[in-house]
Image: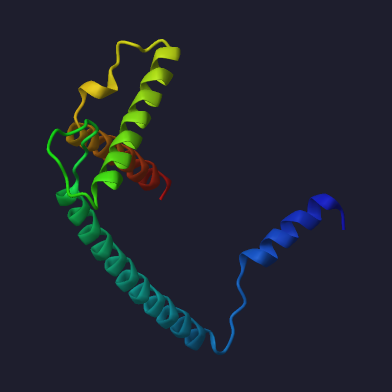
Length: 141
């Protein structure tokens, strides 16, 4: 048998699926397993989404970005921690601004944007990325 005759013969053999006596039971077992796995996956993802949503809402309600020093005095126990966090925020903002200056974007001032504006701008960018990912995923399916 030549190669030209062999390839079509193999294709014909693999094109026909053999029939087995228990194929109906096998299909029913696979369908049951897939539906069971699908239910578990749905419950797990719904639970994770609910927990993540609750945490996200709690964090959004508790967001308080304040990178400037306050003249109001805090309690003596929490003052060093609050001052350290404030200085870390100021140092981070200065580092980002110096990076922007080196890149030639000195007109883009990060400190002019308040904490909540920066949070919502970042959230908007993440939602746009999520939408782009959903569009790409829907095109692949």
